[in-house]
Image (cartoon, rainbow, N blue to C red; front, side):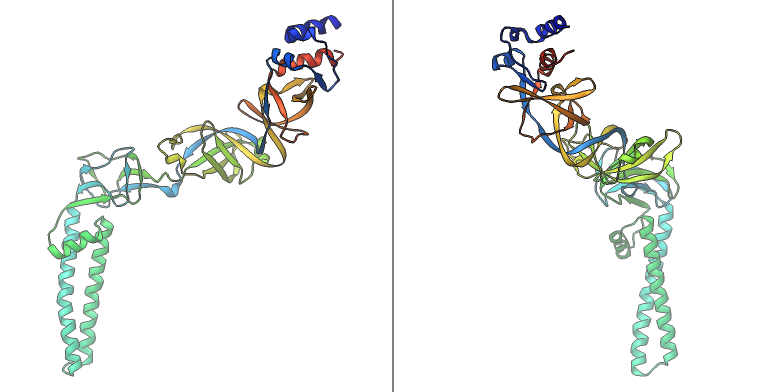
Length: 374
């Protein structure tokens, strides 16, 4: 057994054989020269306030309140499509122009009701004056006023129908002034956003309410995360979600109330809490993507981040090596999470300790070779 220990020490420590040291069970006494020979690099523990709980894939989706389907407000033939997929558009921007014969009929009826109201206004003003002079009876005034109100109601109705058909209020006002009918109908964007899909084609005849474009406001995005049923109890609303290889963060706002029977997962929804998804340099999160995420939770107890290379394992237990004046103290740790090439650990630390972040394997061999009876 002693021969085995000697050979193990020889393979990892080299020059350390020529400078014998006295070891305690939890201490490695070693000179600075031998530390250098072992290739040990020192670093600091990094205090953390969050610990990783779960790694899971997520799908990026647009909130339903931020997604719109632009449809034809009247039947007609599409003459022009002014936007393509991926274009940024502003609210009120013209997306489609179409030729609609039905629009001509609606404009004609509006102008007729406008003309009737103008005639009714003259009669209203005349009879109002005559009533004041005592020339006409109260009954005739009431009939004139009732007819005038009917004209006003009809104009307002026709005006609203034109607005619903797709004409803007300035366009309707211009129609009332010029009396020039036009079958060209402009379809405007209801929001500022991005064209997600173009559905119609130029020259196509479409019916009323036929879909033309799908557009979305991407200022907010959701992550739909499938949580395995055995981990449901460890996730809660308010937990933070990190997206791999990006600075973007999200927060869980909803946990589903039912488990998917096909894969036995629970749907969790997280909202991206920054607008970084829209940044030109950070536009790495897009609707439809499937990305890797990590759910983290705040911790009340002291926790620290350390490279995986700094952690040694022996008989199912984990240790790190803390530099002291004699060499290194072997300190047990508990691993409470992992993030890539780093581990989140807890133990009796202040955070100011200098630890071996490289060369821990050689230190472990040194420790086991003279501090153990194996």
